[in-house]
Image (cartoon, rainbow, N blue to C red; front, side):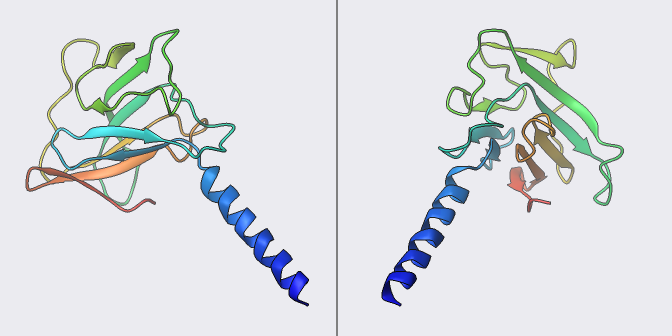
Length: 147
């Protein structure tokens, strides 16, 4: 009986370790305005670790993403390490070395506005966990709960 309990305990701990270590690419922010995006992934994640592009969209209605408008998009240039470990911290509106801005095609993106909801994300099919929704409140970027 004691051996069986130890086996169950070991199996449970192994599953928990695997689940924690296998997280795909995720995005987090700090509270500044403009926010700084940070990237991470679990150590055991074999897929979903690379960022093909980063978009920031304005979400006009809390109930629907259907009318989301992309206000900023950047993409890594060929040869840039776009893995979770290689990605730099990215400040909204500042194109880091090794990236190009696609939207807007000319000039900086619009400043983030108080009370509006925004979402930063990678490609949803490739990195489904790589998104963060936030609102600008009292001059700070406040991360909203994951959907």
